[in-house]
Length: 93
Image (cartoon, rainbow, N blue to C red; front, side, top):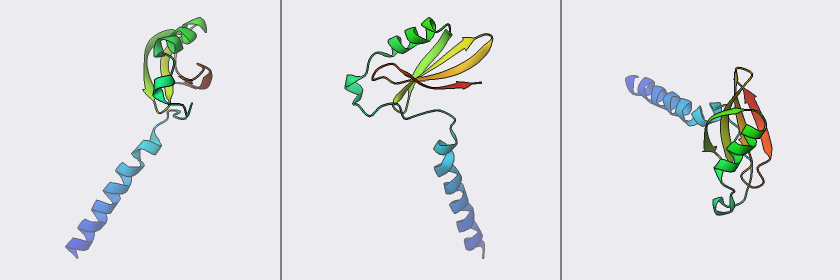
């Protein structure tokens, strides 16, 4: 009986950790081109600055450039396509 309970607990823990990436709130699908063809991340940051955001940092999220910026006192996550630097998605925090 203890083995059955332990097995169920392990299966539940595995299910929680396997689903964790799906719980992220980011946008991850911006382009299908190879990373070697991507434009520089600094250009995505420049686009955000042109749009009036104070850029805090940026990173690669899936196949997108995720730029964290502040505008009007609110934090935003901006997702740019590294292919053409088009804004694909915005999340207000």
